[in-house]
Amino acid sequence: MALIELGNPELLFLAPLLIALTLFGHHFALRIKRSIEVFHYPPVRRLARIVTRKGLRRSAWRGTSLGLKLTITILITFSLANPTVNTFSETTQTVEVPMVMEKDLAGQVVLAIDASASMGITDVSPSRLEATKGILLKFVQNASENVRFGVAAFDKEIRTASPLTADKARVEAAIGNLTVPEALPCLEEYTDIGYGLQTAIDLLMPYNPSNGSSAIILVSDGFANYGYPDPGTSVSEATARASSIEVPIFAVHLARLGQDSNDGLMKAVAADTKGKFLDSSNMDELGSMLDMIGKYYVPTHEWNSTVNIKTTLPVQISLGQVLMLVATAFVLALWAGNYKHYKTSF
Image: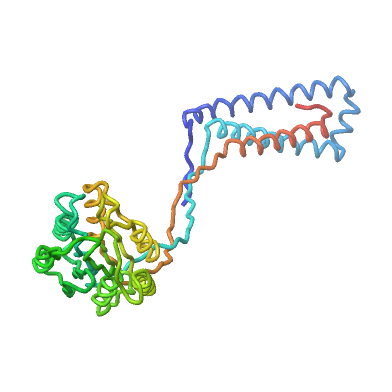
């Protein structure tokens, strides 16, 4: 729907005055033309011209010229009033909107905890294992209620394997009961990190971990000296298996001295599974990063939906210039007619 508005409607009150001036001007222009005709043509010749066809056409032109003058006056008056046409333009844009369908399937996190003798070293206060327990207990407490937790504690064998559960009390008990064995680090200790990761993956398998809703958090000093057929192969086979089912491993390296520590192994585990390497250099930051893992809620299905968005924009078209162009065309037509019939421009 189009609406016409006038920017200066008060100028329309000039229309009667301009029309009156146009009529007076037309009247005096005819008198001037007659006087010119009298001056140029004697009465006998003037009478002869009047009765000819040219004279008749000139008489008809007088009415036409008056109509043109009035039309020009009205067009100029409306042009000065600044008329505009207000309408609306509707555009349609097609966009893709990401959609998410969530079911009652929350994230699964298995805590793979190194409980070997080297985790009793006190370079991290009060000890590597006790610091691990403090961080993980806080992590479980702050995690979403929808996240299931499992625990796989290990040294050269599996010390604890707790299946996934949403019961935080059971998880906290499994973590709190962990102790380091009575052995001398490096001399009497054997640690099979690969075996611990394989057990963590086994705990996830009943929950379809390949849907992207599962993760493993490995907490260790990285010291691995046991495994089949060798420690390095044991770890690489475990990370390859985790990678094949798209389970990321967040490797938390909890050690500050070089003794019984291998941060390079932990970095490789995280990189091979598209997880993340976390260091114990800043314990507060480490706890905050772990909390982010425990708060995620993974959708079971994602897709893009095509949506048409209609936008209505106001459009304003000025008619002032158009009216002035039309008036100019009528002025030219008036001038051409006057020159043709009277050999004058008015």
